[in-house]
Length: 636
Image (cartoon, rainbow, N blue to C red; front, side, top):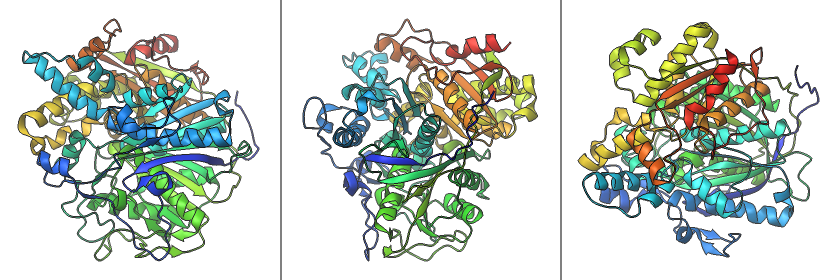
């Protein structure tokens, strides 16, 4: 059976926003619609990165004082309450949303709330301290704060801490998208699908990230950071600089605004995967163009007046993105590369850039682009030297990330109906479970050369082995074009520990560039997408130790909505020493953690039905891939 509704879908209204960036707090964080002014920039040489010895130490830091007005303890500075910088940034953004909802929608806490957040590095700043403390203990020293560091060292720790502070931690429907630089854009998309299905009344969606030496060293090793200044779409561009920030939206269906006037509307969402390379984009721009085209189909329009570009100012990304814009939009409208102003805010980038585009729509001012020098004819884009008043009705937001993940949103100034969607049933059609792998076996299963497989971390090897075993079971061609979601318990904790150990031993300029991509939890999904031509939506999840069930439900949401005809769900755990130590240090040594992986195939055809109203249980469910074992038993 299908849940058939042929009435047009309402667009989604943003009735509250919270933001912090190097530009400031609230609207100041994203205000770019300033007529007759050139683009402001907030990045500069960063003292902490310089002291650490990085050769390209440019960054954009948010203010140290992060005001909280709605915090239960009374007005405060988030930096004084939350030891982890990422948590403090997230709290500052959430506080603004809570204040607005308390004022405009006083009974909002009695409604069906859902939360979809995104991050690239989560609690990485605390994780660096945790890794160092473990090394000290291994060398014979004691460390009385190990337990406190462990509590803050996971990807989900900042979310858990901040939601608890605002009494939102028991919100049943929540997900954490670990999709690197596309995380918050995908968070908005998942939130839209919940609202489209009437599974929630209000969705709080967005993302956050702080600046860590771990991440800064990794991007520098990949030669993705600039030696001078970001110059997107211009000749001689050599990369971006990092930024920190957070941005959240409160989203509702059109018609459910109550007394809260929408700031702007989200009309469409689309996602895709390149399936080409773990860090380099599809040079043709086809992958990102598919995400944009899907967002247009969802919105029921193909016309936009402004493109909020991903624009990392790296040679390959900007060239790819220029081609993608041309494929999806045609003659390029004004392009706004916001990262060149506030830095690359990673998990916060998608929504901060969405807010900047919405600011342009609201004020009817096309924003200026930062950068200098001649435009690159190989990466054509319409850039403005100064902001100009122009009629702007709709904007296209583009995001791209490690693993080849792409996401896109269509934004509008005025509400417009969207094409009807038929929500389909979702089934687990097949599933497999593996407990170990080796390079020789994996090479035989995948056809990938042994020397390349040997460079992968154990988590990616396990995930690849599970998906390869699934492909052998259902037929490799069956998976072509599917999407993939990777579900995590403790994600890449042991991979990160190994990367950080080299950073500590040899210095941040001597980290291994080939090892850095695997520190992204989205790497498992990306490697599987490349190997098996999975070009549908892709990302990773991990709001707690039952991230595997979370991945299953997020993937099922996309199948139900028609964003993908099939989705692969893969959950893998390397169960290494850092992960085991973290469980022990947080009083969870009794939670069973084993090495292995599960892969499931979801379709709308036949199999074991997935109840989209079921929810993960991060406190009591088995850890990681073990939570999916019952689905294999049912499917067989």
